[in-house]
Length: 293
Image (tube, rainbow, N blue to C red; front, side, top):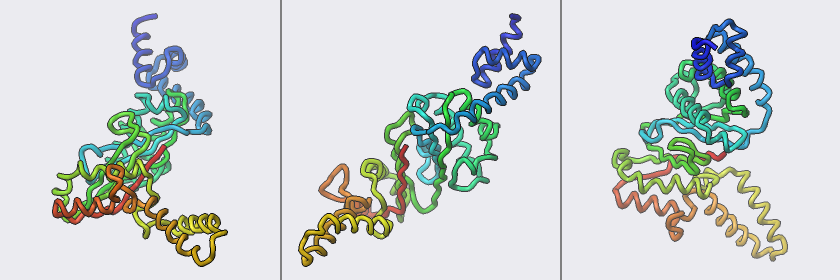
């Protein structure tokens, strides 16, 4: 085969990730026109991708952008695939990185959403849907954008913790704790002491920040369970036992009430108070998020 044809095949393969046989056929079908061959491969890829989009996605990653350089502005995206093998694949991880960066830098999309909000997003100059379709065709698995969120605040800092990492910005479990303070610069100086709070969320998976933010249905359901467990208890003791068990449940399932993972003798609320006093700061946990594949 003439070198010019071999160079065309190589160029087409590099730009699409398709196999040599498919590239040869695409060029043959389109009179060696590179752009038409790319379109032809994409059309074929769309047919292949559509067949994969009903398959279950039980693996994936949470991808971050700008979290390692900023405590006040970053974005994340939850992306699912079918297997752990693909979740570790460089093409998949590079796509996740480029997508999360594009989400972070785009000022027109909403601050949180799903794939439906990304139809007009450009990733390295290409439309989101085309990029995703090309990746599905190349990798051979269903890939779904579950959700994304942009974080920004002028009055607080965000502490991120990535557990089970695939690289510096992607993991299977991720937690974010927002700390409000009367002195942000000084608070950033003690970021290492505050990181345990984000680790706490990943490790202990609290249901809410405190009792007041715990859903009423969760408490009602737990109360029903406890009452069934103590139905044979004398009536004059039921209320005391019920309150004791409920209080225990609240402590174990709210971030501020939980025993600190690095020092179980104190709870998270106590730890935060100690830091506030030691560094003359007014520290409070404003919010928390947990992401889990």
